[in-house]
Image (cartoon, rainbow, N blue to C red; front, side, top):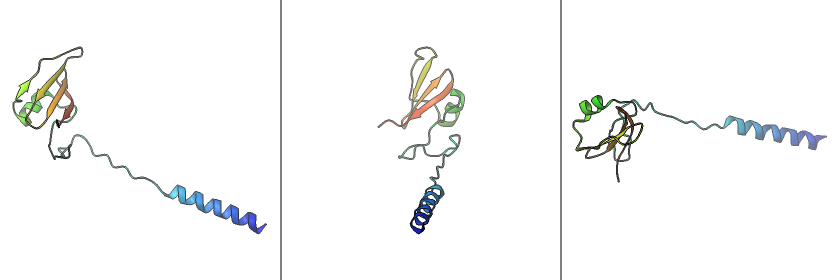
Length: 96
């Protein structure tokens, strides 16, 4: 009976240890102006309008014509590239 109690106690302790361990995941709000690359480049975030990107970051070096349906437009800046669907940012990247 003692051996059985020891097995039960061990199982309970191991289960409690597994339950008490938890991974903490922190996801920052993408609307904040934080560097969104290793280089620390602040770039437009999803949902910004073309007008707000132009107001905040200035004129792009190059504006590509809209392609496809829905129309996707690409603006190239010196440090990053912004992709728009209609007039809203869908993604911005730092080229390697």
